[in-house]
Amino acid sequence: MQQEHLFKVLVVGDLGVGKTSIIKRYVHQIFSQHYTATIGVDFALKVLQWDNDTVIRLQLWDIAGQERYGNMTRVYYREAVGALVVFDVTRASTFEAVLKWKDDLDSKVTLNHGRPVPAVLLANKSDQIACQLPKLDSFCRENGFLDWFETSAKENTNIKEAARCLLEHILNNE
Ligand code: GDP
Ligand code: MG
Image 1: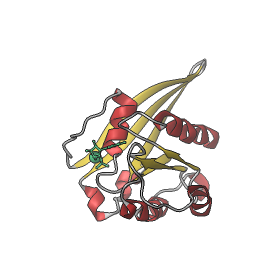
Image 2: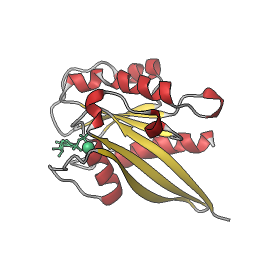
Image 3: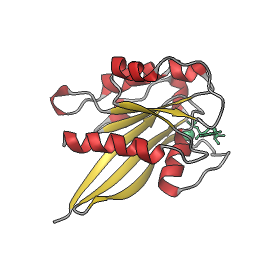
Image 4: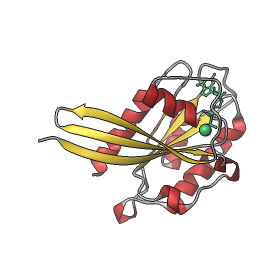
């Protein structure tokens, strides 16, 4: 029998890091230089045939406009089972904000039994020249990220891989 899962996954990070672009690339296979930032929360649904007997309905929650405040309301986080935390490799300030986003996530939502929601770090715009960054392997270990991926929404690099990594952990948490 087919099993169907519905997973709510949040995409967070500072303004302009590429959250909307990553979602559009992953869900609709498109990239554009210009997405008008609609204010509020936006959803995209990606349906994945994970294996022969598992279908995943992945609900990706985008944010717009509220990034500038650096945190979101509990309503936005409610029932999330995973998160993609995005920064822009060309802007150090967006990397510095990553821990603020991770703290906001962990303080507002947990899985059953109080375990933290699994989060994957995305170093986006990897098609551009990166600024100086610390070693991301140890950064992830120390700060509770599952893993990190160098992504490019523009060139379609590593987005599927990052989503797969997160989904594997989410399925293991079920
Ligand atoms: P958001 O505010 O986090 O949703 O960021 P957007 O998705 O709106 O992207 C902000 C800008 O960065 C847009 O001009 C995008 O075209 C651009 N952008 C997003 N991802 C990439 C990428 O991987 N590479 C490059 N070069 N530009 C990107
Ligand atoms: Mg956006």
